[in-house]
Length: 203
Image (tube, rainbow, N blue to C red; front, side):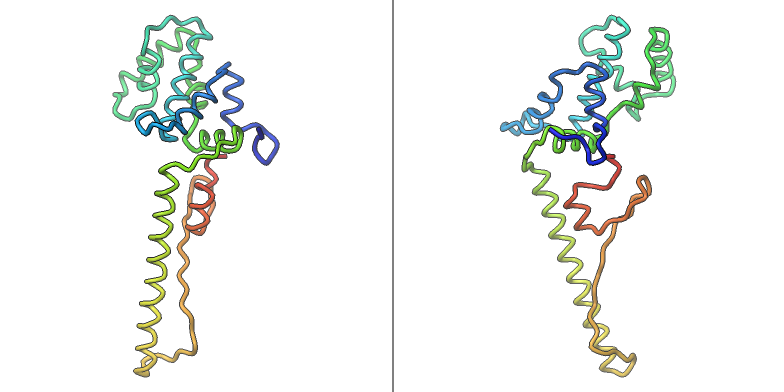
């Protein structure tokens, strides 16, 4: 099982080792590739699951006693946009009193892109999920729209040329749809973006 192309372990690989999360990789893989659609989990669900495990591991490291489900609630209080500022601050202060590095654990949270990288590149999971079907469907839709835009534009230009309103040689119309991500400051042709599974934010 490999790490990323630059020779350093991916974020999730490092976190699994740092927080002693033995077995979590197999759990993530099983949840992502479950045969039963009711048991199968998306990459976003897996990211939340993994991050809750990080919280529980951080609490256990500081010998913080919790009841069942409390780790999940703490994660919700730290991350959910619907949580009030007062409730979040109270939880942060409680954790700090228990010796938990709140900023450290929050910065350690993995994105769904990081989970995808971990599963596909480190654990080398090959799984054609429903997501793949949706990606292919979007790609086909974009290609059809691009072809239609080029055809309509070419027809209109030909009409203008025929009416002596513009001068146009044997021109060909091309349509290039590109996606720019300001977070990683990268730009991709939409087909290439879909094929590679996203931008560079996962890195």
